[in-house]
Length: 372
Image (cartoon, rainbow, N blue to C red):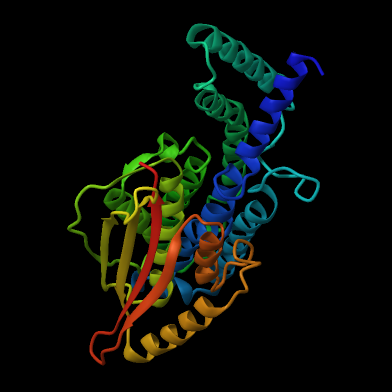
């Protein structure tokens, strides 16, 4: 095989890994951040809840309005179901409609791949080594995926144009036209916001810079979970020193925090106190790495709920069944954390419980080795 073919295959394999890798790749982002509840929760829950507002109670007593609203809502929800089931995937034989391709398969990508070869060649001549190769390849992988991301955003906007506007044509059949118009305006403003947010997921994420303070990352995750669960409005306690994260540590802690905070939003006290505490543990031996230990403490909504959560967590933390951790959402949060521990992305995963009739607490603990 000649050198040109060898480097072409290497670049193609690198791009495939960049897209398909289930831990750090685009596939991980689609699976953990979009398909597993985030997209539908973001796009649908607040829209559904609008009709439950007290000021719109009289509208729901109008049978014509109710029929129109339910028909529109069914179409709106099914559009998100189709996006999640068919389009928010890496393109493959099983998911032919997947919006992102792991292959260098069009003229646009060929041009970018050839530019990468030239850049690598010039870099090698200039520096006389290949130290910069991973950085250059990663940068060009983002350029290679950019066209697919743009086409994904176009598809989402096309769906938006066909389903996002709620409008009752036969206004004369309504008992309260003015209130119906106010409701329609609120619905349409909200769907505009939701589709814009979903579109933004198909931009190069800010964390691609791979550097952030853990406290800031913690607050970002809480805000993201708030968008999925409008009732989630916790108080945050964080008085830690700045601890910067880079590279793979960022991704691993981002994923772990997302799972833990999402579990709190679903099973804990939505208005309770969440405390973040972390510290660096110095190694006993010079050959060992430093360890960053992270603790997230949360409150339960009631003592009965606390006991139920405690039993469920203990059962899952002791189970070795993690095969569907990144496939089945449901109550698989602990499975996902255990899967991350199995892959050595995090270490020393455990839960501790503070029994109290008045204010029982649940503490999630994990650690990550620092190589810097």
